[in-house]
Length: 326
Image 1 (cartoon, one colour):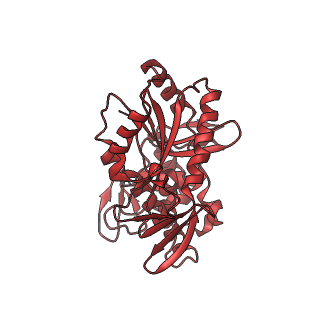
Image 2: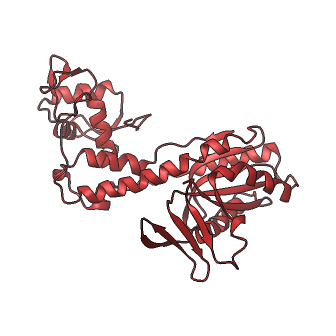
């Protein structure tokens, strides 16, 4: 049973909004595009395990995706957490093509692809640290009697996994994603005792969901981009021309003649992703490229947003149930 669904990471949504709002000639455009491409590949890899996980009996397992917790000292991120009465498994998903060699002498991962060899961080070190942090978190929350296991899951089917001959235990920790159901069934035989009751599992899941804190960093600060570098206005949802005009109570694209009542909502989502939830009447006019304070006030009022302050310097708090622009 999926207890916490997988959603598009906020970092990806912010990068997409930033690319939409930067001219292609911007000096950092290609850097941001490359960053987005890598994150999308990682997200695609994480989604690849959904199919093999669907073969597990729903009544026996709880699955939580994209958790970020605090162990009282540091935050730690978990791609997928699988909970059953016998154990808890951390699944760290890696979407890496080519040939990967686990060098346990120097604790590094060597990837060879298209004739190029690069060194990556050893995911076994990462999962080992995640195990310790999760144990610390569970102890803090009075649920420390269950075994914590971890697997590195390679989501790219054609990836060739190699290691030195003496590293014969690697196949106990690193697997291809299609082998997941079989591996989990094997682990259940290795850990036959049920350590968690149904009540304890549900209590642990409630705590995990409650203490999940998604990472929310400023994408503009990350790439050192200023407000005046961002493209303002409303993109036409049909032809993507910038910018639409407000004519007789609707948004009008002068390029393809498309009309849209609520085209401003997508633009305000971009504002939210780039600048945060707080917005003023002045910022609405500046970002949507409209001159009327009465129009911007009506648009904000129609969204039924919470706000603070007096009429003159009122701050509204943007909120969107679905931030995905897909």
